[in-house]
Length: 199
Image (tube, rainbow, N blue to C red):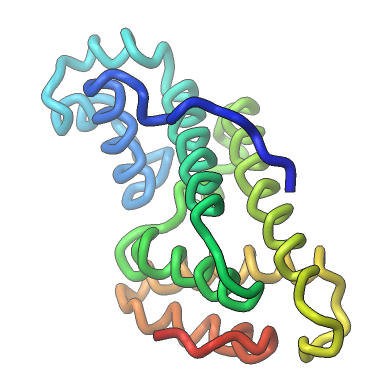
């Protein structure tokens, strides 16, 4: 996986960081199309016009939220250790526990329902976020010893499967409001990859 050098992404003004965090939460719970600048401003405690000082458009804000998510993913990957199976289990648990199965969806996944209505720049940012994870998953799956997987799929095919299944399981558990539905959806994948059972 290509690594990038970047300064800490949290090195921004408190107001901008508050906007990014709150916007992410709203996107994850209400979707990008449901994101209202007025509600965002009210939650952050600033005037709506002040949002445009930090982000000239809703698209710019959405792109910044996804870029921040990519940086957070890169930082998370940088702290991982253990076997490839342990790292894959950690990835699945990140979807379940950090993104919040049953309560939220992935910020990138939240763009799916209105994909044809969102701006090309935001679509590109979502594609880059997806590809960063697919690239990492491909490398990690490729490190598993031959014969240890119950499949004939390539590492790249399995990476796409893991990403898609985690996204879908997160969406399914959001619809039901039941985190356990996430676990049930990914259990066949856990078995296929011979991962430790999810705690």
